[in-house]
Structures are given as structure tokens and as C-alpha cells.
Amino acid sequence: MQDHPIDELVANPNRHFTNPIEVLQARDLNNDEKRRILESWKLDAQRLADSTAENMSGGEKTDLREVSNSLLELKAMTEAPSVAAPKPLKAGAQARLPLAIGVGAVVGAGLGLAIIVAYPGVTASPVIIETSVIGALAGAAAAIINAAMRK
Figure 1 (cartoon, rainbow, N blue to C red):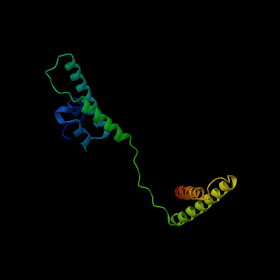
Figure 2 (cartoon, one colour; figure 1 turned 30 degrees about the horizontal axis):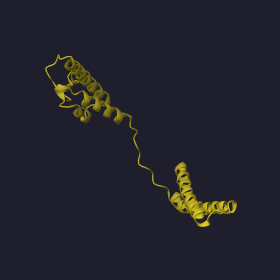
Figure 3 (cartoon, rainbow, N blue to C red; figure 1 turned 45 degrees about the vertical axis):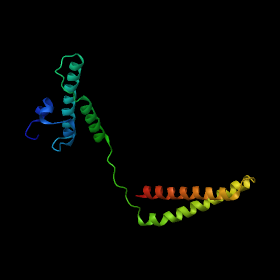
Figure 4 (tube, one colour; figure 1 turned 90 degrees about the horizontal axis):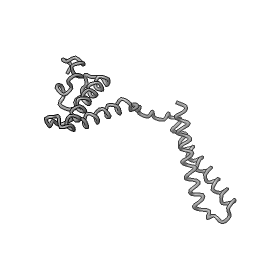
């Protein structure tokens, strides 16, 4: 492929590539060149499909679906944001996490007691357990967010 100028690849993609996926896998082409080649191939495939629909072709197989899918895949590859590996929590943040979970659980239990006092007909155990768990989760989330914001 490198032996051929990009204009030749764009003008005659099916002479240089067996299928559209080869274009996507070509390491010596940038994304813009791949897009140009695939769009040219798609235009040729659309013309062939139109000719076939009008009974003007020799029965050749069209690559329209495969080329269209390759263009969509290329678009997804170029638009996908790169995901960086998450940074590990700093030593201080790791030490604060259990504390935040414990404080959250205590605050949740206190909220549970307040609910029981406000609504005397409520059964105590499930409310205290549920609010303690919710408080612990909220405390953990708060500690993680706090640690992330300090980085």
C-alpha cells in the first residue's frame, strides 16, 4: 500500500484491498486517508447497487453493507474518547475510606433512630439497618469523591 499514492488508493480501493476491513487494519494510513478510501469504495458500491436495481449490471456482488459498516466502525474509533487508567488512591485517601464508611454508617443509624422516633409504628431493626447501610455507602462515595478532587 505504501508503494501507491493515496490518490490511487482512493480512486481504486478494490484493486488494492480485498475487503473494507483491510482498510481499517492498514497501519500505514491515517484515519482521514482510511475515510477517503472507504467513502470512495462506498460510492462505487452504491453505483453498482443502483445499476443492479435497474438490471444494468453483470450480477456483480456489491460491498455496500460491508463498506458502510467499516465507515461506521472508523467513525466510532475516531470519536471514542481515550480512557485513561484510573489513578490509585493516595495513601491518605486509603486511610480515610474506612473512617468515612464508619462515620456514614453512624450518621445513617442516627437517621434511622430519628425516623423511628418520628414514626412510632415503624419497626426499629430494619430501618436502622437500612439507613446504616445507606449511610455507609454515602460515606464511601463521599470519601472517594473527596480523594479524586484532591488529586
